[in-house]
Length: 267
Image 1: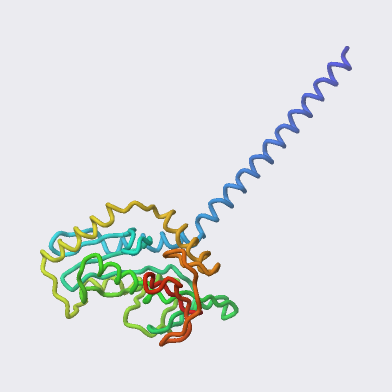
Image 2: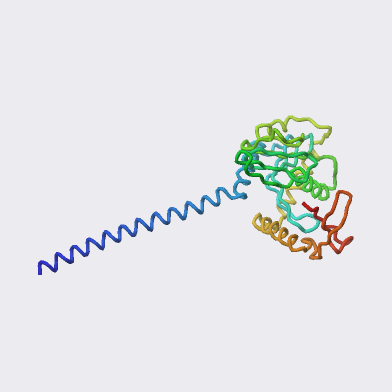
């Protein structure tokens, strides 16, 4: 009887130890999985972009009636029904500053008229190409101009965060985040009255508030458009993309031209 009781106690003790070990292992695995998920979100391009945009928004500050007007993360559908996202719009008496934020690292090389710029990492061992953000922002300005029905009031600005070396970029449109505060005091040949500033601000707020698309849907639309182009399908009308010759070289244009004027230059 004593032996059976002792065996039962030992068995129960061993069971408790195994249960404790299992619980510790399960806890450690859970922590690792959570860390991986958080890490993916933290270092994803979307998350890095949002952190950069938040820093720029903080520097731009809030809207001050009669002095400056600020809109961050303007998401809308353009005149072609495609989704667009503008990081920041800063309006003062010197114009409408349309700001594209880039949270990149490494050395950045590019010129204003080049289609693609280069990001150099790992002491030159890794290079990434990306679309010229000045041209990207020029497209944003084009859509804003169509919406507001005004030209020659926009200033194209690209801001890189402090982790990027932009000394090799040849352009007056590109700033480091440390230079951004100077925009507020920078003069141009544009003069907007307070009434005009408020009118443009309210029109853009209306555009933002009436948007029927979310940021996730916008990102999905970008991926979908890239896939359609790779498959030779026009992302605007669903027509077939055909190879054509233009003033600046070959490009893919929509077979439904002139009803559809979508085109993509060959990279």
